[in-house]
Amino acid sequence: MTATTVLVTLLLAPAASGGAPPAADCEVFTRSSEALPALVREWFGHSGDERVVICPQTGASGSARPPTLYFGEGALTQQGRVCTYPRHGLTLAGGGAAAHLQRYDRSEALAMAIAGAECPPPHAATSTQGYVETYDIGTSTFLGIMHAWSAIATSSALPASGTGGARGAQETRVRVQAVLGSRASAATVTRIVRIPGSVLRHRFALFVKAPDAAAGATAQYVIYVDKYLRGPYEFTAFAETN
Image 1 (cartoon, rainbow, N blue to C red):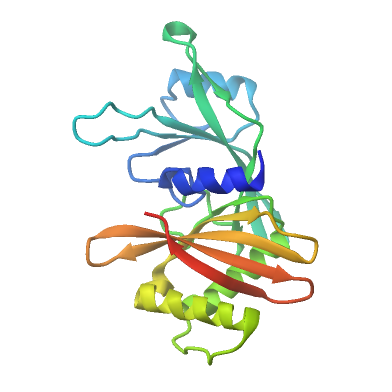
Image 2 (cartoon, rainbow, N blue to C red):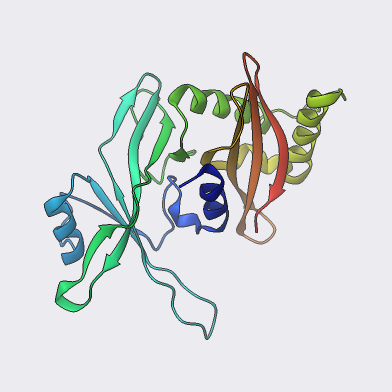
């Protein structure tokens, strides 16, 4: 699966597929959970996953109910300052007594979080940021992008105008602050995806979920990030995804 295909897929994917805590109607099962569903018990019997996440979906009024989403998750490890665990999609195959879960592709996401005194538990409701679902990035890149986002989200100062690429980064920062305002500090990063770039210019898409105080819902945004060789991470474009 190419980076472009992954990006388009993630733009259309439901919020439940993120590495952050799942929606309220999602259920997380571990190997020690009581009353495991038969599908989950069977999957644990022949996989190395530590958790299975089941997310029922709701459709528009009068429409057919969308299929339930399933995800498998691996063991939690710490690499330096970053906690990680693998995450992949599952699909329901067969029917009746023969129904079972299986992986529908070989792609693997890594859920990442910055470690505190210890790694936050996967899907911990008390974790402010939670885990971020990442595609094709390393832990140093994750740290760099998250620190750059934190600097924008928590700063009230607007930058002066510049030229060229610097101006693009400054304009994006102004746009983030103008749209999110005080909500920026409460926004959570849900996904970071590497997208096509070059040896000298690495590019990423940062997916952000911000609380919508007016509607009591959430707003989804994608912010594009550039990283030139030996240069800083720069936010170069900002768009709403819903």
